[in-house]
Image (cartoon, rainbow, N blue to C red; front, side):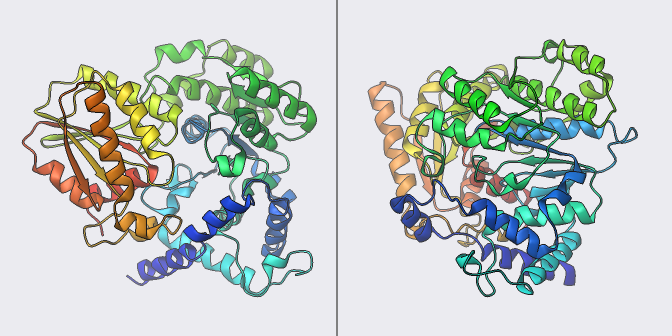
Length: 493
């Protein structure tokens, strides 16, 4: 109990580092979110105050991955492949990803598992105390005066570096948070390899409103002498990525990864046709990394690129797991199809997956959509989902907030300060989504589904469970919704 309480103290302290809704809105209006030239110098200064230099992280042999859609899944595939080599030189694998679904500990994993509560707590407060007990030159770093701490994501990035070094990680996989050029993970100096998953329009206030602007940011992770791979991208984005590769003096040219021939014959651990692209990128990243570690030869890598996979790669791809992404959960009377999707590209992929699995499943008594997207263009996304699933008839459409429990409380690890509490309490987004769905039904002369608006995820889940079964439910939208939904299914407040 003492450890759990201390862990909750760590989570509470971490949540205090979130950027609140008012600050984010002010930053958007002022245009200060796009380019923060102090972002990297400040991260290096925080690192110094921990007692390290960025060069210390090179010993972890880091794979650095960015993108808009699929970067987390690509990381999961890479981790699963490399885990098959634990007796051949890949002894301890660190994985840093974001956001988390149920617990913040998911962001910092070792050998596939979130670090334990006691370890998280120990290292969290060691970092906290080191930063509290050190100072910076406030003329150079005016925002680092007194007992200031880095914001949430920067703190978690620092914590991950600290944990992985203390725990003796010898291979690390880092997923970029937002963009690349100014992302806090970009203090990595010498990655073994860099990867770019599919690009799309997202985080426009920080990255720009066009695909070339976004590609410029993503290409910021490329490093001198490190090989770099990307999946096929629209040509305007590809031109920018190639230019950035030349500018950063990467090893050779930026290499474009098509679908690996071997992927067709495998049952990937992550569902969805689109995962074949992520798996193919992961194959190339893992192979290149293992060559850097002198575990594979150039001949091995060339054979892998042609589709001749070692058994370790095949097993890794088939056993990969990534919760909340095209996940099927079966309860008595209810089958939940769960996928986080917050961009138009991910809505397209998610809809395609659900349409395919729904067509193969037995006809349910009721089919339900459970949806929310609190911070992005929710009406555009729900309209796209509606059109993509025009042939799928929903009997009930449920719109909820991301609030976890019927008491009005969030799960401690899911507290969000970057949304408008007033808008959440008034159910503004949810009412607008219901109206948009109704308008689309009228325009398409489709039989109307019953609309339901609930203030929290727990009430939404209880309502769905009360329906006469069998019930088929598509849980889609924000990863915050998906995370809260999984917490409610676990039933642990």
